[in-house]
Image (cartoon, rainbow, N blue to C red; front, top):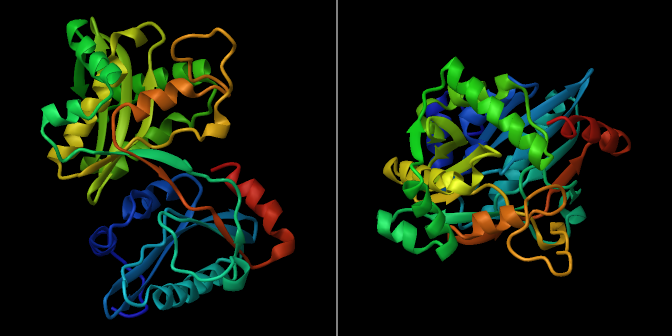
Length: 344
């Protein structure tokens, strides 16, 4: 292959997986986002030691668009990575011209092989991260005992508490009833913790498009849903994508055992790491009030509860590189980007 666009799911995923690419560069993610207002283009170039690829998402506004490369591009040339990126950038630019793009935003998965300042290589520092800027990645190619052993004692206690309290975990098919149940719990959680959600079809489409790469789990107490999650796997990594919990049964350890079972599902399917998909940075944590004790709730500006919940599963904290922006029409780029990415 030379300077071609991959035209099949199998070919694209095979190349991206072989290069260690991210789930958001998978064919499924592009197909999924195409159902919710984004156009998709995929470009690739092959060098002597591997392929470079980018899945580009386009949000249109009348005759023009803005472009977004989530957790990419994917590079494999370890000898001349900068040359490989420059060639791939030429194809990206060509795609953006065809789509009348005002501005391209790149959310790097790993630092790109560039020298000098952003401006010297044709970029400026981009907007705030659209995906989490910081996350926790947990090694899961371990036996059950080792998975538990790497957790903080408080998370181990909560996983075991779920068993003592009679919490059961069920893997659900993406039926209408299951999606309804997940979405009802998600909207309850969003109201409690003050965050926005997509409409119901978004989560139904996620499960349908990812198929056997996706997982939906429910944790139940006395037959009632206490917590739920959706996860997906791609290559050697799985990721926790969407989750919700009941206000009534949060103290029963349901959310903890749910993540533990999701890790085991991903491990048994061949994944070696599990991405808990986002933790707050220190600047996002509201200061504790004087005299406060215990973990605080992850509401509003105070996300200490979320931070403790995720970091206590073990693993490594990962900070992603800054966003990059390539402005094709600088005067209009900011306005167009604010419209498009504010609604992603």
